[in-house]
Length: 294
Image (cartoon, rainbow, N blue to C red; front, side, top):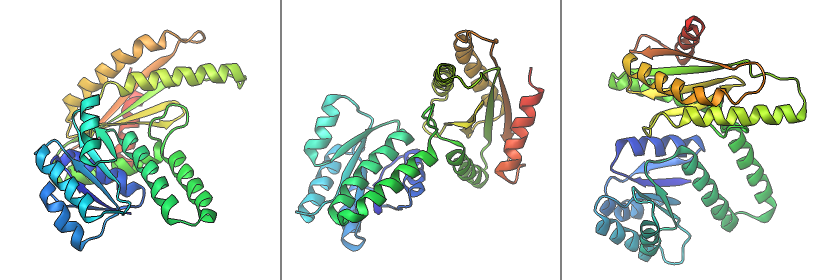
């Protein structure tokens, strides 16, 4: 789909572009709300993501103008707002939007919202015989991006994100810190009830890690069976160490819930100041630091 994004925040635009293009869509940036309709008259789009916080009246007028111009057409509009209460939701829907995504933006919510919109759009456009195949492809894509146990982004999604963040950091000459977190002594024999307990423990540890990085651009993923990774854009070595200490403190109480061999938790850190040429070298540096950590 061709998707129009109207958002003042560079960070939000980056996250939207990252998520939408990861599903194979083309993203356009119209800048301000009042530029939306003129842009759409010359560049047909299939969906609109619009920030309604900057100049709410202008945003509402832009949505109403789009609806007037496209009467009878299926054109989903997703409002973006820092308000996430019932009043904000009602205001967005009454203005003509079809959904509301609250800020700070969540990658997972963006992707799931888009999957829902795709499903409705394709149902209107695609013969029934093709819909099962499309739904299956969407499901496979979702599985290929998220870890089934923890719900975090998986290694494939992580590598794509790290590659993008590394290029951006080099271009803007900002530091980029990568944390690798290792859980030790979590393995059990393959008894069903023990596997279930292990999965619950992994989910609890994942939640304890994910709650610490707070910026929209921070990214937490499940790297492997016993490794988590945290991408911290525009974060130097000291900043990375501070986040690592907070993650360690957040995870420690969760480790005591394990009834068997005491669990261990270590964090390795590497900061790229443009000295690393590829994501593999940066990952290796973080893993090397992990091995030398106490």
